[in-house]
Image 1 (cartoon, helix red, strand yellow):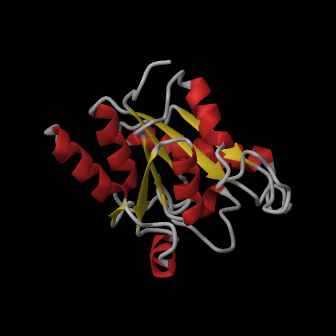
Image 2 (image 1 turned 135 degrees about the vertical axis):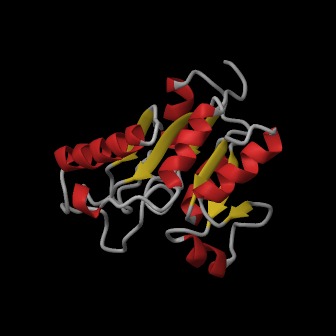
Length: 187
């Protein structure tokens, strides 16, 4: 397997779009966080491939169905396209928290699927999330956990558990600025 491709894994709700404790149940409720779509486009221009790994327990809870989830993701893809960005693949887990699912973060099932699909080892691959479960899934596969303060990020920081040594940024745009500045490839 190739090592460390130019790949970044993103959580969806709270990283790319605004999060809601009532769930994102329709395309109308999917609202991008200011600067997030442009950040993805900048990462793409710098040669990064983007994959999304998102828990979607609203499906198991009967709040929306797979067709609606598809419409939400279509809206995301179209909004990204308008700013020159692209997510190559969206991985989602439709299971509820009590199902013991291998794909539901903090379990690393979606991350293993991303590794298979991209034919790569995830060691050192940045995985950006806003919750402890995002960080735990990243650590389980050797990816580099990154916490953003958007979404549930401030709550995660306030709890303080499991974030020792984790890079923390205000937003996906802030993380992107930092990463591209480190590489000397500001776009």
